[in-house]
Amino acid sequence: METILVVDDEAEVLATVREMLELHGFQVLNALNAQEAMRTASTHSGPIHLLLTDIVMPGMSGHALAQQLSSQRPEMRILYMTAFIVSSGQQQFLEAGSNAKLDAPTILKPFTSDRLTEKVREVLATKPRSPFDRPSDPWRNV
Image 1 (spheres, rainbow, N blue to C red):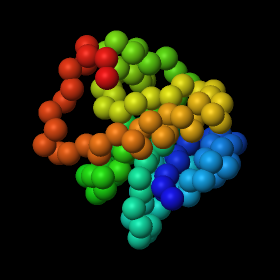
Image 2 (cartoon, rainbow, N blue to C red):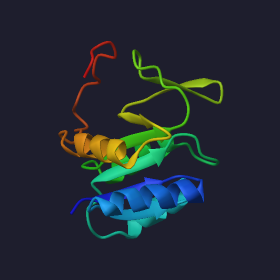
Image 3 (cartoon, one colour):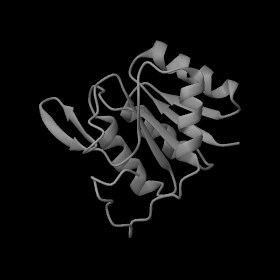
Image 4 (tube, one colour):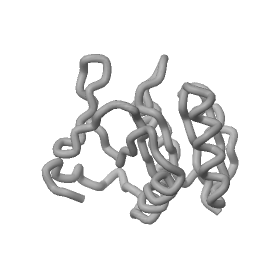
């Protein structure tokens, strides 16, 4: 059973996503912000297979959270979720007026349970990133 850490600052979204994933057999850890997610990850003794995080959150963005947790758990895969538009060509996200380069797949809210499960399984099926991997070509459709 894969373990997924879900992070979203909206309690209703967090509860809904948790329910969707648990109904499909995933173990779910959840957090309402990046700081809570970091505490949860540090106290969880088993593997965390996937970080599913909102991108825009107060305090620390999902992107910054993913960078920090990836250094502690390099085997963990990342899937961003957002209600904002993501440019598929360059995989760039406009966040508070600045460009943050996304280094992981993204799913747009709102999504169905089936779409979320499909995307989660797709990301879990990919090889974990290595610190020695070179960045992919942003123009290549992967």
